[in-house]
Image (tube, rainbow, N blue to C red; front, side, top):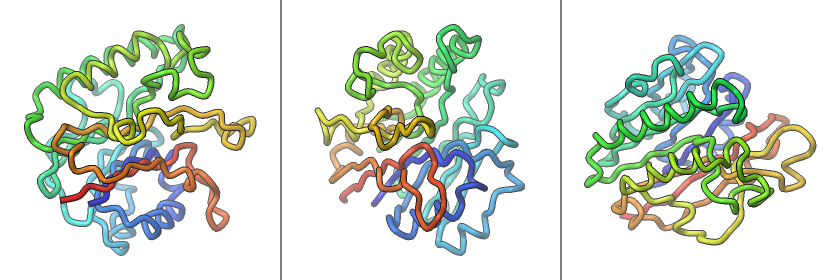
Amino acid sequence: MRIATWNVNGLRARIDFVQHWLDARQPDLVGLQELKVTDDEFPFDFFSDLGYQAAILGQKGWNGVGILSREPVEVVQLGLPDEDEMGSRLIRATFQGIDFTTVYCPNGKDVTHDDFPKKLVWFESLARYFETVDRRNEVVLCGDFNIVPEPVDCWRGDAADGTVFCTDEERRRFQALVDLGLVDLYRSQHPDEQKFSWWDYRGGAFHRGMGLRIDMLLGTPGVAERVQSVEIDREYRKKKDGNTASDHAPVYADLGP
């Protein structure tokens, strides 16, 4: 089984690009973030023609999360409890025995911005919610976390410490999720490799290697034991057939039986 996460940065602007990736990589289960469409605007038929079912929690022009799957999922949760003000940022469902949640975590903008403390509170709410999930099962929590877990996950290294994405406050909240019994699947396979999943569109950041690893697949030990490989799909941060990529690369993992 191939599972994946991808912040598409606007589905309408990226739909042909997403099709190109689906055709090339053939994932079975995908968490999507930053759809920027309402439920009514979502192209369910388009994805059905490609062989995918979709479950989404949309929002007009902002946020929005969804799950694409080869077979229908059973939706368990739409939205993070007590965090409606922060928008459509969480969807949870079950698929072939996997309890699968994808999230689009708040950005925070800057450590001096009013959104920064709201981001920290949102992560606290996420940890409280995930405490209610039965983690004895095979559980995946994936998405755009907007946190750089370690200095190696930022092109600036520890020179970025204390800036947004790289503060102790953010990292403690990310670690609190991991401490619930989750494994960073990419890091479990690539313990020392510096590889990024997001690059700013500006300043030639992609080609200059100025990126961050903020898109993650986290899984319980039962999932981690099934992992055969995990890849950050850097090739799909490049233009394809004239279509502009998202500023995020997909991340996918292949699971054995």
